[in-house]
Image (cartoon, rainbow, N blue to C red):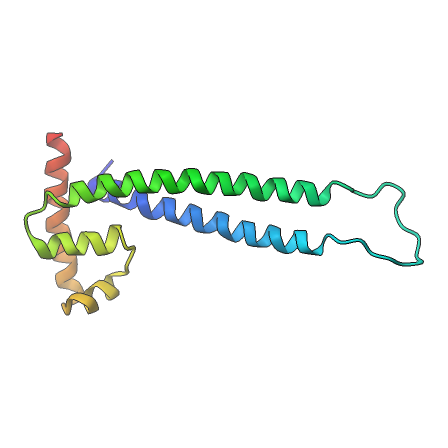
Length: 138
């Protein structure tokens, strides 16, 4: 695994968390639609009485997965922070923090630091070389 791949793991976990949160919202909408309908029209003799319960169980399972992902993300972010802190150059550290801990785009980073995006790429590349050396030594 390259230094960049290692650092990008936090973003991937964050994406999974966001995906599961979206799934929960969808399931909540589905659960809200599961209501009794009073009508004089004939209805199925075998209704799915457990539809709401199944939906709620799915929501609970997803919440448990999210909590597990959050714990995993926190541990990984602590490891990434420790790794970033070995970089002596403050600008390089800041770029890595903004990119891999705050998940900012290159343009956002460039704007925040008031620097050209190409220079941000250059500093980022230099920092990755340092991270790679640190990983190889440990």
